[in-house]
Each structure stands twice: as structure tokens, then as C-alpha cells.
Length: 387
Image (tube, rainbow, N blue to C red; front, side, top):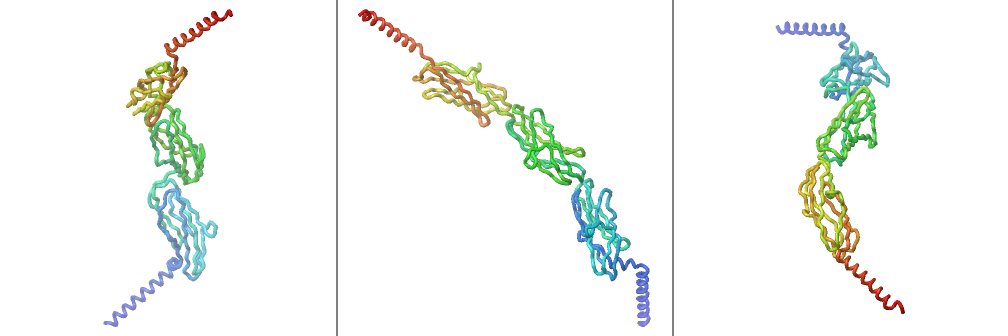
């Protein structure tokens, strides 16, 4: 019985070996596939749209004879391109000595306009073997221009200068010369800088990004509010828009004058006089905590009543009183009172001219002296003139 089983096993082994030998004889491609291989270390990678991937593909000949094969790249989606080179030449066939390997350089160009996802293709040694490769595109791509800014909105008053930093990305396959312009409201000034130089255009290579600065200057007189300033970078083929936003808190302006606009008066030495002073808010923002300050000549008095205005709305005015007292020793002539209305944001200044006149009593006293002198001269002339 044992001999019978052993005989059957031997017969089966011989049949299997004979069948395998027969298959190899009929299918020499199996031997070729085992002795000729295609290899690259990175068979699945992730890249963004517009990227060019360089593969080093090795053709390895483990056989005993020279192997020559046509190299075919197949399965790439529409719009994808590639180049296959070795030794500096574009090739489509390679020959490898036994026991050696040859390196081919495969460059695959991922288009800009592509959907996110996995894309598979193969590099084949025609009729012998093939190498599967997968590319994962990390995001949806487009053939367009993008302008972005990390800080597209700013806030300030009308005297402030606003500087924005922006990036222009050329997501196309060609160099682009972008014209730079802004659709700003009337009275606004917008200028561009590239590489720290004033510019109206900028050249950007394909799939590259260029940084620019945008200087925005609002008009001097502007109501508080939010203002939108579209910035456009455009060529004949593509364009991108960035909407900048400027929030104007209002302008701080003030004026110091009198009700009739006359900044002068007359006074007698030692006398006191009160004049009305008008502080007007000529800006578009509320003025708060307005302090009133006066600069007076030596030995004079100059005091505002009140000394402070708590709040003044835009376009509104407030009247205060300035009490002036001239020095007793002031001689006739012109004197200047310096006035200032001051807030943390703005100040208004004015010079008030005060003319000191001779008093009436002093005038009559002078006239009497003159008359006395004249009388004395006449008396002396009459008494001693004939001698």
C-alpha cells in the first residue's frame, strides 16, 4: 500500500513539473518578466496642482542576455504631459546589459486646472513588465490669478496712512505681466510697491507668488464710515481682485476764533476785559475733554471760563469767556495773548492781539502839563523878553 501511494505521488510530481516546464516553454514572457524589472522608490506621492514630478525609473536586467524594451507611459489623464529622458536624450526604448541597470528620468506635469484626488498611470516595458504609479493631487486647482492679504481691513482717522501687504499668485503655466490698479472712491490716493519700489505692474513667473505693498491715503475731509477699495491685478488672459476695507473713525479738526472773527481788542493799563471765544469742531469725529490754555504777557492775567469743554459734536461750536487783565505797568502798545484748545487728538491755536491805550485821566494830566509848560514860557517871555 505504501509503495502504491509513493508511486502515485511521484507520478503527480512528475506531471506537475512537466506541466510547469511546458508552460514556461510556451510562455517565455514569464521568464522575461522575472529577469527584467522597472523600479522607482516613490510609487505614490502627494503634490499640489501645477507641480512637476521628477521620477528616477530604473530598468534592471537580472537575466543572462541583453534585454531591449520599448518604454511606454500610459494611463495619464487628459491635459497631463510628461517627458522621458536618459543620458540627456528623449527616449522611447532602452537596452540593458545582463546584470546591469539603466536609469531613466520621467517628468510628469500636473496641470493647474485639475480636481482633487488620486490619479494612476503606468510605465511599461512593452510586452515584458510594467510599473504602476499613483499621484495624489492635494487640492482642486484652477488656471487663475489670486490676490490675498492676511490683513485686508484697517481702521483709522482721515490723517492716517494705511499700508496693506498682499500676495499675487500666478496659477498659470506662463509668465504674466500684471497691471496693478485700484477702484478707489473719489479723492483717495492708492499706490503700489514691488521690491520696495513704486510700481504700476509686476512680472510673475508661472506658479509663483510675488509680494506687494499697497499704500492708501484717504481725503483730508471725510465722513466716518466703512469704505471698500477693490485692487485688481490683470493681464489680457487672467485677473484677480482683492477687496480692501478701510474704516474711517473720523477726522479730528478744531478751530478757535471769535463770534465776528476779529482777534483783537483794546484795553487800558490795569483794566480788565472779557471777550467771547468760539471753539468749533470742524472735523467728523467727536472731540472730548477739550482743555483751554492761554499764554499771557508778564504781569497780565488771562483766564478761560470754563477751563474745559467736556464734549463737542462734529459741526458744533461752544462759546467760552476769556478774562483779560492788563498789567498796571503796561505801556501803550500791542500785546499778544496765545490761546489753545487742546485734546489728545488735535489742537487749535490762535493769537489774540490786545492794544493798550493811555487812560483818560493820564491823558488829561498830560494835557495839563503841556498847558502849564506853555503858560510858563509865555510868562517868562513877557517878563524878561524886553530886557
